[in-house]
Image (cartoon, rainbow, N blue to C red; front, side):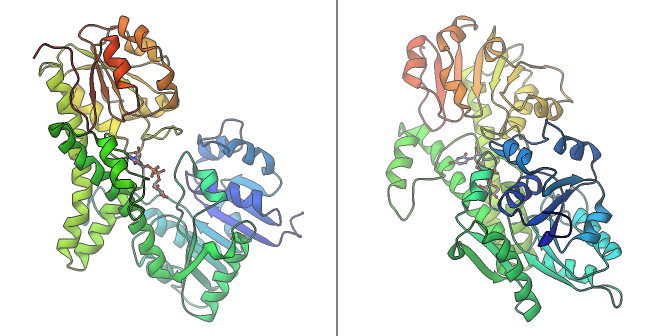
Length: 462
Ligand code: UDX
């Protein structure tokens, strides 16, 4: 394929966790399309063009290397990208507002708006503009108004095509998705734009998995999908607290409940709480939407999902405190896992951030280890002194009074816990925040074991 023989030219604005991997998959699956990913961050683009990609995602590297320079390009030249594109995906940041009206709930759309203004300023021909970032319901309306402000400009057709991939399994999620969702206006030009996007996905997704809806259903579905997933985790976590009091075992309860095919077994793993860039942000966004329409009770219902998630993290810290005789002053705790989940280096909204800060407030000293997230952990904890970072979990545990496992990395199951125990202060505590380890074995070695949703197991005489 050459510049002139590509069927269409796709541009993605935003080379982050969504833009980079989705465009890599599209470029791999659609050799007849030219795909360019642009970002204003020179450093990020430099890394996308290097051997050291800015994102760790299983399967990503080989796919980037296969098509980069052929039909996949990374660039900082946003204007040129806009000029030549037929189809523009917008995958910029939409964090929760940290200021002003709607602070702590509403999405901050400044990057989205700046992008729309840029497209209007530069574009000379008609384009399809696709919302890929998760944004508030009816944001397409705002995009439309900005893009069509002024007279006689080109025509922009707006589509919503939210991304459902989860980090760590992103490539697989995109290559064989449960569904692809496309929202469009119910007009002839809206439907034509929708069909253009369907053509792209049809390169590898069976047609019956491509759902088409109106714009607003598509935007809302993305928020609701994440709210439902987070709500499941909060539901099981809330029951874990009850288990700890009653000697019921959360693993057994989740299994018994999840075997009902109406409930299903997935996303019922109790832990220290959900993290990641989406769940909290999207639920708060939904809460804001409800409040905006005066649906306060519904807003409160969803807000409680986030509040209980905070409660779960807080409970975990309190349990550590109580097991360690209510003082952490001068004590050392090893943190095993800082990423918000395994198979990613991402620490955005990771429970580890909240938990570590609380432990430091109690004046504990922390040694943090993680196979892929130390770089990010250092940034998250840069304001704190009593923290060290260790690549090697054995070094991290040396001389500590306790280990808190916060991310269920597979490699932690393979550690020599006798060796860890021998190097620790006694009594040695193990707080399994993900129910990831063999608790009987740990207890037999001599650890006092505290696992989420299970009663305390210590060696103290009652
Ligand atoms: C999520 C959605 O799954 C995805 O569809 C959406 O596009 C983006 O948000 P992601 O944030 O990558 O994806 O992570 P996910 O695998 O959903 O996990 C989120 C959090 O929930 C993690 O902190 C994880 O540890 C936690 N979790 C998940 C549990 O505590 N228990 C579970 O049973 C499942």
